[in-house]
Length: 615
Ligand SMILES: CCCCCCCC/C=C\CCCCCCC/C=C/C(=O)SCCNC(=O)CCNC(=O)[C@H](O)C(C)(C)COP(=O)(O)OP(=O)(O)OC[C@H]1O[C@@H](n2cnc3c(N)ncnc32)[C@H](O)[C@@H]1OP(=O)(O)O
Ligand SMILES: Cc1cc2nc3c(=O)[nH]c(=O)nc-3n(C[C@H](O)[C@H](O)[C@H](O)COP(=O)(O)OP(=O)(O)OC[C@H]3O[C@@H](n4cnc5c(N)ncnc54)[C@H](O)[C@@H]3O)c2cc1C
Image 1 (tube, helix red, strand yellow):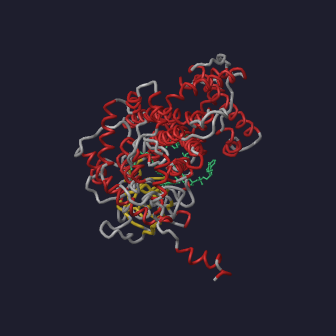
Image 2 (image 1 turned 45 degrees about the horizontal axis):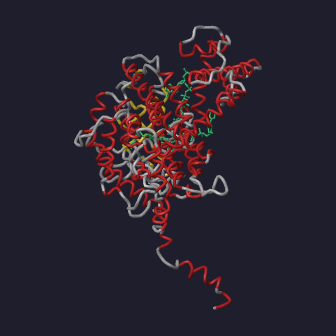
């Protein structure tokens, strides 16, 4: 769409007091990465076959999937070319960089998301060298997915019921679904797309259960794509979002796979049925850990999209004068609006930085694990659980806040905010449900509190527990260091309160698990335990308001620095030129309900009623 840039946005950009490009380079971790990212954007976004004439929302569930699959294989080809270096753009700071522009292409989810994001990465991390050499061929016929959750069990994975029983006479595992609740349910790409999967099942050898292990199973014929004998597979139906991801169900009826199809890097079953234990029994859960880490950066990116849309719209939208004799103001001038939006910008930066830090920590800990050192795994797991939980919960709440900040127009699908919300809120549940993950972190904290309470030596990271017990915390100071001290006091105070409740429940004769359950609300909620006073809160509040005013002239610059292209934002409200109303009218004209001047239902249903007595 041609035309001038909205005057208010031009003025906003003139007001900006910092170098927008410099911030973009910081976000990309260097100018070189910005250049590479833009090359990828240009390359992929210029592929004409990836763009639709009919907006996604007007397609049926089936048409959406078919359209998405067409695009997914174009994108897959490009990704393969990128990886093999046939397109000369490589080396990115996190995987999300390469994949983020797909949001614009699919306006939903790439049906090959799990194939690329979880299937290949799990093989790369958990299969033996020989298995990798066989399965990770660039021209492989396999389209895979990650099959863990069952109809009856998602969070409590030790309760998974699918079995893999070793048959030493044939050197095979027999995969079996014993009952309805054991049907696999949810895996993305399973419904129609995948012909193979990594399946999590309870391993049985000679009647002994060795717990959960991962197996590669072919489920559809590579040529005809028909389900193999003994496989019952299908799609689970429409969802709040993720409607192009063909999430599926899967049942096995004594389906046989070779013994060598168990992922054997960390754990082995030998030909004679000997079980060789892993060095750490949670290494099988490694893919969940990696995805939780990756998600933090992705959620930061979703926040930057929502903030870009809502801030640009708030600069263009004028509603109500502040003083009655003045013209209507940009809604961005209302301090309450600034509060809604600037927090979203700030949170995007916070989770971007933390996501990158976690990505690097994961790399470091994985290298250690490779050398046989498992020492850092529990801390990484506790951090990943907590950060995945709060980043997804914050992101979905803030995306919704941005949508509401756009008033009625935020409710339009063409604003793209409802789709960003549906995508973001799913992350609160998948890859470990919010409360369940917080309880994992609580379990870790309580362990160290117990050491502190018993005056046993603590690792340096937990020295602040001891400080709290000895009341060594300094008086609150309004500074970054003061805020960190305040948070330490909150964590210590909250952990203490939860621990005390736990102990009290135990003293009253409860079993540990029951006592834990009774303390679980305390274990997941944070409250104010710091030395902060009422006066400090007032000072913080007024500093916050000052900061909102300081940020105001730079708001548009700050979101421009995210440098997200219009094709990716897909929003009538958030485009760079700010031609909001023109774009809204253009999108409305695409509605099939505008195709006929008089819809045929008028003749069928309305006219016979309204004209009844006049015919
Ligand atoms: C197109 C290309 C895409 C490419 C991707 C690029 C990036 C794009 C970015 C993002 C997009 C991502 C989109 C993803 C799409 C959706 C995919 C969704 C997939 C799924 O949902 S898969 C299924 C996930 N399921 C879960 O997460 C289940 C949650 N439950 C659990 O994890 C566990 O059951 C548990 C941790 C809650 C409990 O486990 P368990 O009962 O066995 O253990 P406990 O007895 O409680 O604890 C025992 C002990 O183990 C420790 N522990 C537990 N887990 C781990 C771990 N993972 N690692 C290390 N240690 C672990 C636990 O702390 C205990 O320790 P202690 O005994 O206390 O010492
Ligand atoms: C969009 C989407 C995509 C998905 N993709 C995949 C996929 O590709 N592969 C795959 O295998 N799975 C996938 N899943 C499944 C997902 O991993 C599970 O839904 C998730 O792990 C939560 O499990 P659940 O549904 O069984 O919830 P439940 O565990 O039944 O949770 C229901 C409620 O019970 C509470 N609860 C449960 N246990 C406890 C506890 N111990 N203490 C306190 N409260 C508890 C929870 O907090 C929650 O409030 C996907 C899910 C979604 C929504």
